[in-house]
Image 1: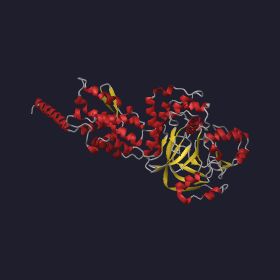
Image 2: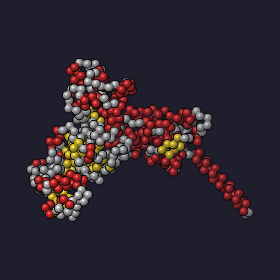
Image 3: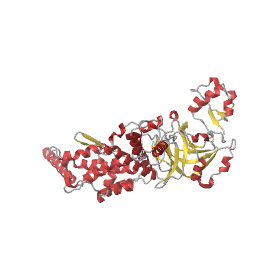
Length: 524
């Protein structure tokens, strides 16, 4: 066969293949085309529409949705009219009512979609598949965030195994499209934890109040003008609009002071006025952040977990869909030595634990005291260990030659009730030298400001927590003996227990009341 005929034949086959591929592409459903787009490098990263570039939020969930349900959000017949656009837009506009941000769900693209359709230079058919993908990504990302919350930027370590039920989210999207009852679908995804429900009610009341009274943030409370103070107290639901009588005003002020951790005096002192003049829009942001933290707890597989709220300096055991089992005061890290925001498991409890101060504590706090007076070690029951863990006679060391940068020794505090960890420690699997523990300074729990530790969490009721985790196997009599130099004992939990150390500046207290807490670490 002549060479030119071979070339013509090859070109014919090539063109035919292209036409055949196009034919099959056109026969594919929008769902299949969307899946192809998502599987391409282009689809994994972004979808571009004119000058707008949209990063995909939930590519893997979208793939799972199309593989499972093989249904697009855009119907194949008369697509312009049957696009489930209005349904999805109404659902996504509801984001603000849940403390989520509608702008996070391709808001710009969705709002511009109608204008694109009216643009004579816009090719609807060419952009149909990526329109499908953007709408689907917006919907499925929103449903995911309702169920599992957005990632927490402040989270320094996540030591728990996240439990994400992908099928739950893809099925939810399918239900939204098939039933059109998106409110009912969202209700199945949202947490039922009482704290979350009450926070959401407070959030929506305050959000709507500000929308209807935009001047409220500019009003300044003074000790001379009770009417403006009353407006702020009413906005925060501590007073009625007719709170004018002295006794009623006094009681409303007492409730407000209690809610923000001020010793209730019923007087408009400087601190109270500062809190009243905190913009209500800032209070809304505090509530939004707390709502997201509670939604994030949906990632915890266990039905019970410990929640330590760092700004509140409190601990509770949360039982999903029910009231918290216990509440107690804790002592957490001061601003200079912060308690990290992280999650972990308790796998064991140590009775009569040793305390090994961290290098920072040893070099910056203990060493200067030892150099000044070597008897400090004996008075506080500290042994000195070398690098191999062997005890060294403190008198044999020339402490004046030891510097904070060159400390070749470790300090170990003996066991007993005078130990800084008390008689019980709850170990956590984390990269930090942070754990929950008893304390030898129980007098500090009476303080309102309990941000006093080096970062660990001191427990007001360690025996109560241990009894919940271990049942009746806790020998409290043995622990109350405060035995001196008793060796530590490990008690393994029947199953590891999740602990969340979170940063909520707005929360619901044990009495079911809203509280705001000082932003001690300046994170908001």
